[in-house]
Amino acid sequence: MKFLYVTAAILITGQSALADVGPVLFRRRFGQEQAVQLQTKLNSAIPHCQGFAASAGVIGGGSIGTLLAAADPCNKLKSADAAVAAAKAASCDAEGTKIVLEAAMDLVHGEKNFNPFVTNLDGVCLDASLPVTPELRGIPPLVDPRTTTPAGAITPPAGAQAAAANANAATTAILNAAKAAGKGPGSTVSVAQQLVDIGFPFIQNAQNLTASGSGAVAVAANTTINATATDAATATDDATATATDDATAIATDAATTADSTATATAAAAALSGRTVTITITTTVTPACAATSTPASAASSGAAGAILFTPAPVLGLQGVPLVRSADPKRQFQVAQDTFVGSGAACGRVGDKLFNLCANALNAGQIKGHTGSDIGTTCAPARDNAKSQCLAAVANL
View (cartoon, rainbow, N blue to C red):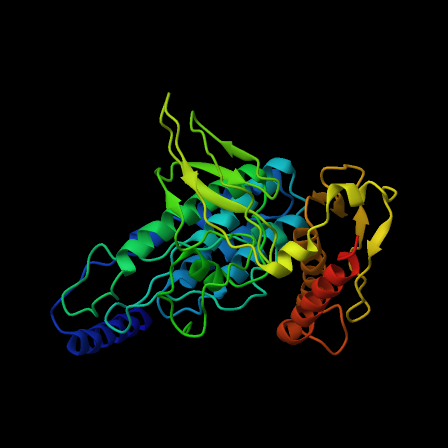
C-alpha cells in the first residue's frame, strides 16, 4: 500500500505540472553543464586519499544542483572550496590533490544554467570573497553561448552572442593555464567583475559593474585573440610568454593594473609551423605607475629585509612584504617574488584576506562567522594593500 500511495502521489503531481506547463517541450542545454562531472572526478581521487569517499559522494553529488537555473550562483564556488578543503582534510597525496584541485577548477569554470523564458542574462556570483581557496581565484566561468534561442524565450541582448564567444575563449585559456600552473592567476574581485573586465557584462544584478581592469585576469574588452582556445599562453607580470603545442604567443608588455596581480591570459592555437600573435590591450593607471619600484632601488636593501607588515585583523597576522634576493624581481611575499610593488602589495592584501576568511569559515574566531567576511576581511585586505603601496612608494 505504501508503494501504491507514493505512485499515486507522483502521478497527481506530474499531471498538475503538465497542466501548468502545457504540451510544448523545449530541449534543455543542461548536458553542457553536466560536462563538469565533479562526482566522477572526485571519485578518481579516492585511492589517493584517506577517508575521502564520503566527502566525494556528498560534494560531487550536490554539485549538479549548484548549476541549475534556480541555484544561487555562488553555491558552485562554495562547493569547489569544500572539495579542496575535504581533500586537505583527507591527507590526499600529490596526485589526489591535483585531481581534486583540477576538478574544483572545472566547477568554478562551469557554466550555470538560467531560464531563458524568465531572463536573458547569466547568473554569476557577485561575492568578491568567493572562492576562498587561493588556488581557485581568478578563474571566471563559462557563460551561455546564446547560439540558439527557444521559441518564446526572451531575445538575447544585442552583442551578447559575440561577447559570450570571446569570453568563453578567454576563460577556457585561463582555466588551461591555471591547471598547468597548479593555481589560478588570483584576483581580488568577484568572478562576475572578472567577466565584465573581459568584456561580458550580460549578468544578472550586475548593473553597477563596469570594466575596471581589476583582478589578476585583466583581459580588456578590446583584447584581440587570433587563435582558437585549444592551448594556453600566459603572460606574467614580467612579460614572459609561454605557449604550448607548437604555438608561439607574443604579449605586448606585462598586464599591469592598479588593483591586481599583473597577469594576462590569452588563447593560443596549436598550429604547427606557424606563429600565432596575441595582442592584449591593458591600462596602466598613474597610481600603478607611481608605485612601481626600479630594480636599482631594490639593490640598495638587504635581501630578506621587511618592507611592510600588514596590521592584524581579528588577531590574525598577515604575511609581510620583504626584499627579494632576486634583483630582477625585487619584492617577495611568502615564496612568491614580483617585479612591481602593485602586484606584490596586492598579494599581501590577498594573503591577509584568505587568512581571515578561512578562519571565519572554520569558526575559529569567537563571535564571528563566515557572514562577516565582506565587512571584516575585505576592508582589511584593501587597507593592507593601500598601506603597503604607501610604504614602498619612495623606495
